[in-house]
Image (tube, rainbow, N blue to C red; front, top):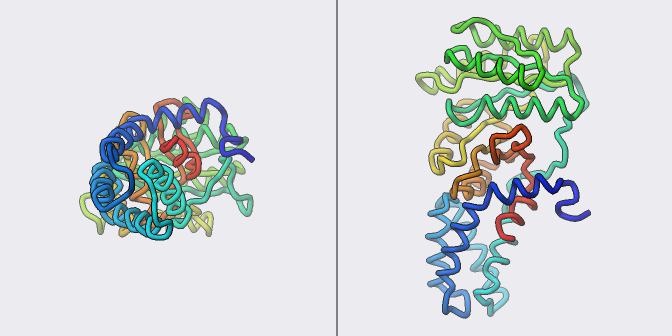
Length: 316
């Protein structure tokens, strides 16, 4: 099966377009580094290190990539600078594979039990509610019955925004008044979902509480209450990060992985930024699968992350 055999032409174009700034920034700098140099030497690798760090790949991940290239050069004895982009392509693809990124070609969910419960976490402004709306659309398009729970009751606009998305996509939103107990909202959502034979439930949670202990306690309470209705809940804790914030996304990932057990990542706003390297760094440093990437405002611009397609688009 070809690399893009499961991709529609539109999805491939969206991916290529979304990564264009990252790609342009990386390769324009790379071209300057290798100009007038015939082989990969220490000077080339030092400059490459600076380029990767500047692309928000992160220091630790950059050093790992450089080390992999050094091993490749030592093994192959003589490697020309013309091969550098190919080597980068191969080593980054291999690293993503090692970091538990599993390619998926559909929005289908496990059929072991219903409903499948996703708890979504992330700070305000990263595109959390938008991601939930787009996920609901994709799940519904895949033939699944979806329920949304507006458990971010601390921010006035959060419940309203999720309700707007629910109406736009055509899925029910379970909500209470602002300031209501988030765990109570989650409990009501799961009860309604079970009573109506829903396939998937997506629970929005507060983007920010005033300290990490409060955040941890709130998320733990929501989990505990949901398990009274669905013992396996949540099946997935999805952390949404804004890729355009670069190193700030690393810090957010660090805080949320300390506060709760994050099982998957969605990295949004990769279109219009040169900081797409953050996908590589976060995947490598936290060993949590990147499941979705956001490449625009359209309903279909939330894509399943496919490491082969991502790397190929970045280096093609």
